[in-house]
Image (cartoon, rainbow over all chains, first blue to last red):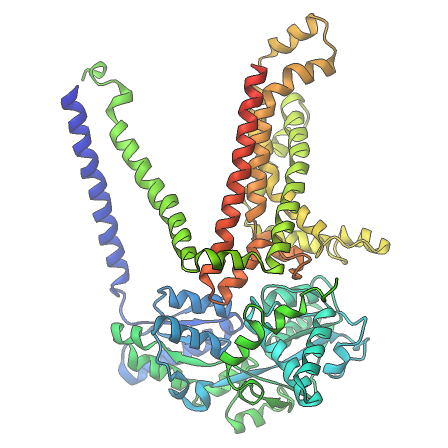
Length: 353
Length: 275
């Protein structure tokens, strides 16, 4: 009996050991790049279609140039979530996110990206941008023309939650910037923001969720959203209703330049030896061809000529950027969205209540 | 080969126990320890600070209230379902029996989107309530519906087998001794089912507290009104506040564990009283 138990004890350890070593070998094999040169682009939700297009073009260009076959993988999700994945070890070669703040956070928390990444590429490493517009129901029954119409009592607004959505932070800051420019004082701007969120009945966790709430569920009178997201909702509606959209876009008199920056994750590319490809990939976004593709997917190209050529798609909007209104994303985040920031104060009960 | 030399309970005990311990360490203990370590980064004071936040307190109350209400609804509904499914033969019984499991297999986000579209103002059911100015989606009522949906199979699936195994003779003897059907139910059947009913309700409750996917779509996520705790965890994560996020999770875990423990305690006391 004793003998038997001992034997089974030994074989147990042996088997578990075997299992573990098998797992390790398997894991190291599958991550060691035996599949040739690959590039991982970690991006946010609304750029999925854009990068499908961009990748196809770039792979061809790269093949012509170097004869090498390149595989580009894309990962999409909420911008903040994607940034956290990179911080926690997702081996992205490049990140193309919704907010500079998210890239800053990667640089700061994981040191995988150079601190001065904004200088890596022209225009603060922003090859394209978007802006914040209103989507209203057909015929604009509430007569929405500008930000001021949003704070009128009885206007139902839909915007995602700035605490969980990058796009929502742009919405918020667009309203803030408008109010600050118009009313000059921060107190008045805060009042304005409070009035906006008082009219908001649903705070979805992301921009796409808000679009669904507005379009599918028929809640609210105005959806505050990315320009490209609004265009997408329009084209979906046209497809469903035989060419006539149930919605229309309203451009406010002034809005924010929603910069969606890109950066090389230099520590990863150095390790994988993909630095050159990553650089060429992001530079491609700045070329005429890249800018045309960007415009095709309703992101505003920074190339003035191409923007002008697509003027029918992109009506002129007076835009301010985040540096003008808050100095930097870090400041903006700290002031508005961190714990105890202005956004939190909106939902705090008034003293005495 | 002579099998009697190696009794089956001994032959593979070492290997099975080893695998069990290994598995439970990797899948349960290590991640949970990570949770506590991550929380330790903000310290006790930080943890307490987290719970001084008005929004978190409100979300805590909301999560546990709607979780409790939905668990109680599930207790009654689940019991009724299990009863009907076991005690009666009717066409479509097998189909209903299979449908009960759907909330288990469906991705909760899909459930949330489906429920939100049905219960919102222009949805099938929401439309019927809209003229009376009753809103279901984007209110706590909507959250309760989502939680009832996802917690429902727990109760059915824990009560059902016990009810099935209940010996017929018990009831028959009760009737023979002159008990009314209500007395039989109260004194003979119910005490047998009670522990499993409690266990199922407890599981449904625990699941409700932590449910995220289905709820965020139907709740509206308004701070202080319809914001649930798991959403606040995600919120803290989005702000890179890992310590605070896991802090909320730890408190949820401890509270849920305490509640489950209490339920188990009452359950065992109850069982002893009746046996």
